[in-house]
Amino acid sequence: MSKAITPIKGMPDIVPEQMPYWHHAEAIVRQVLEEYGYDELRTPMLEKTALFKRSIGDETDIVAKEMFTFESRSGISLSLRPEATASCVRAGISRGLLHNQRRRLYYYGPMFRYEQPQEGRYRQFYQFGAEAYGLAGPDVDAEMILMLARIWSRLQLSGLRLKINCLGSDATRERFTAALQEHFRQHEQQLDPDSQRRLDTNPLRILDSKASQMQALIDAAPQIQNYLGSGERAHFDGILQRLETAGIAYDVEPRLVRGLDYYTGMVFEWQTDQLGAQNAVCGGGRYDHLVRQLGGRDTPAVGWAMGMERLIALLALGNDTIATAVPGVYLVSVGDRAARAGLGLLEKVRDALPGVRMIAHGGAGSFKSQLRAADRSGARFAVIIGDDEVDAKTAGIKSLRGGTQTSVAWDDLVPALQKHIAAET
Ligand code: AMP
Image 1 (cartoon, helix red, strand yellow):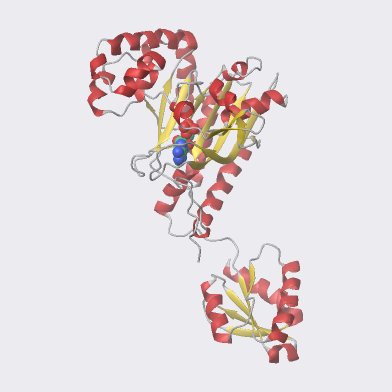
Image 2 (cartoon, helix red, strand yellow; image 1 turned 90 degrees about the vertical axis):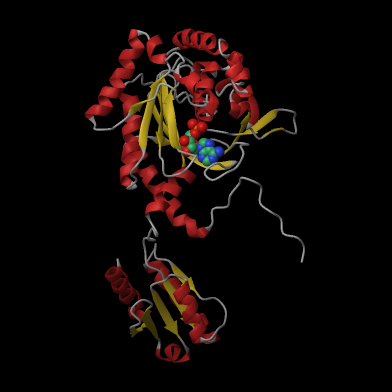
């Protein structure tokens, strides 16, 4: 036997046992997004590297250290997308979806970041995201958050806490950044090497540092709230008021900066204390300059992305099983004649009962071993055919839970199964 090929580090397979959780979560997120009027946009997983450099920012960890980047055959630098907002804007501009329009878009798919893998942090992970273009807020900012609160409640998730902050306009951030630089420069020897580097390149990100020896210094740093202009303040207050009206609890978190450079104005994260270190399930904010920065016209924009692996981990904490919707049927057929007849019969049943899971045993085996396989399959009913049944043109229907068995004529098999299934759902 040759040696098995191992999976790539940080790129998990999602095995069938986990899929009911995924399908359940995916269906609900999609349903809520559609209910709020968001339309799906699918973009490629591969983009020109320049797109991410220009949007997420050269100095961010994501672009500086975490992209899967390679050269195409024609010599262009390409990267697997580390997130999809930049792709949405690129597609929006190049497909003419944004100009003079209000657009509510959503996406779903895998993202790629070369991070140190750990529980809840992977090199391939799935994100659902929503983006709204052409709406200046604060109504749509609040809508983004209300939509997420509805997703949590429909998934029956509790314990998610909303953290929100306002980063202000470019001019505000410039003044704030200068104040931060001055503050941290006075204590440069206390900064860790990452933060020393960021002092020149991206001082805002120092606020995000988890290094324990820097916490007091960070606590003493200037706060963005004191640098906001009256318009920015009013916009942010408008969002908070709308959240209060809707009964959404929040914490204003002056140190919340997020890891992407394109944010302007409001930023937020939904956090949990149930998942250990990887506590952010969803993050987003306003990014009013990105469309222009990527070659479009000035377009107000706001959006978020949620990590599905973390959402599923939360969902699985409270639920041992998420039931598959429709009970299954398992065909047990003993002998070649019965197998042939059974397969034909099953096709007729499939015609009449779309959506019902029907598994043919496939291959030989004794009655007993086939029935054991039927039990293991999770099906609720076995349809049983042997030589006698073929002669009499009948089939047995056995409940795999209760154990009762009835015999029906082939012509009556569909209504009989329908009755059984209706009784079980
Ligand atoms: P971001 O695109 O960095 O704003 O992240 C949005 C959300 O995606 C986070 O709140 C996480 O839930 C999820 N996420 C980000 N990076 C990863 C990763 N490496 N592995 C799993 N989930 C991630």
